[in-house]
Length: 610
Image (cartoon, rainbow, N blue to C red; front, side):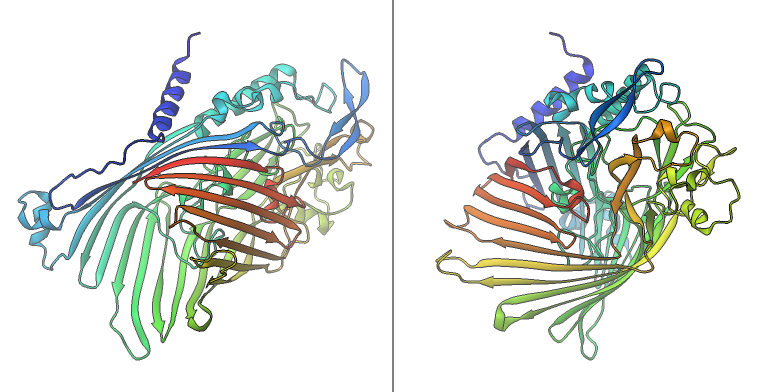
């Protein structure tokens, strides 16, 4: 059997990553006699196997058209469910990861060299520290090569059956081409990536520190979920939030400066920090492709009558800001303000005139408006209780907002120019074309408008160390819990995330197509957003046998009624690590973590780190 060139390259990339993760003698590399240059290596291979089928949800009865005017009624799955469909016990992820980091201090070289580095001696000020960092990262996802057929072929797209009459629906050939198109994109953006991940230069002189180049910057005091820590976008294409937060940050081309301040009155250890970054990096470009097991809330069959577009910022677009950090007695405070692009994008629909179909599709444009964030944090210790208290506040100005659309069932066929205010607001942030005025009968394209809402975000966390001798007689138990609260000011009553959860029959009772569309599940129902959101996290961990056995339990609870739980045990014998865990999500579909319901899985990860 001959391999294609593309398949051969993928197999080679997977083999290289896998061989790098195999057990090998611990090695260290001395690049220079002074030890100023250090190389770090982290590589792992991780396998996830699903314990829950991607095919859950309710069933109903719908009409499906076959042949000319023939119509049959069949049972279909139109609630919940994910795409592509795979059963429990199937492979959900086979991730290969390698990161090689070079840190090089140039102080000694600067003092004795006559080349470009020696030019730093000519500066009108003393350079106390000079160095640089280069980090390579390679990633490969094997599920698209040797996983279930739903991921390695376009079978589920090819078998898609539309519910509209043939005159308004895509042909089998068009659906087949559509499936190939989506699969090609998944192979292009979610199979292999090789990047110069970070590359920056550090210069320090007295109270001033400067870092310039491609880098990550994290502010704030929270874990797992972000408030002030929204500077770098997140890459969710290789596993969503099942992958650690620090591993998902996308570096930016950035200038970062720190200025240490002298102690003054009650203020001590104070400094000012600012950053400015250029670039069009956002979370949804490339994002999670259709056909990925981590695409939240997908329906069992994608809609070929909808085409998505990604409107990313300009390459020279600016994001930046500053913060002040200082101590007052035993409390560390920070105050920050900056401009950034959030991970949740705004979506604007463009509905073409007349009937839509595969050649005249509804267009969904993902947009990333710039959002100012103002906030503060405070951290202090309570020695009596062996506790660290972390608190954080953030105000989001103009956070992207979307809405389902509200009004009478026959809104979509009202005449153009209607004065009914309930129909005019459907275009503002609306994501349901069936709720647009005069849908299917407009004489010109209907274009939605981007909506924005301010929000108040607050979190408090407690980190506690306690001896519980009956659990661990020799080591403490570490407890870390956080409580998150979010309030959307003047939230839409039908505010949603741009994530489809299920399809329902189209409520067009007064439409001329009413008889045709009767009981047909075409209208998308999107993930509801509550005006007040509450989320609690808890992590418990300890170590046994000198740190070689590390059990951990993680729990999230979203007050909409969703539980996330992950028991984990890690076996460590440097430089090797073996991690075994089970991840489950139970409860309603929605909230902040319920969008990935039905992704329950077990993971085995083998890691080497120097």
